[in-house]
Length: 87
Image (cartoon, rainbow, N blue to C red; front, side, top):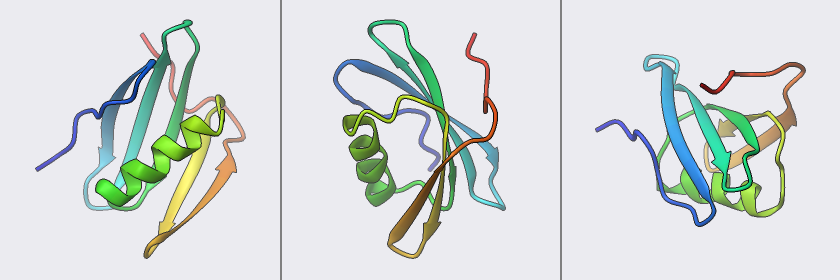
């Protein structure tokens, strides 16, 4: 079952799956103060990945980021350009 969104206080979060076979997802985030940013997740989007993404948001990473999953570990880097324009 695909995950379309998940809950976080102060943020509206929407998940867009770019490629199911490659497990590539965009996590589009809108803060209550109007900031918009996107995380790109390479890897399966499960409860462990959602907890990691929430921890990144809580750590105040408010820019576009790329997150790669390697088993149970994650690597995060700043995206070299804007990942997705929010409507």
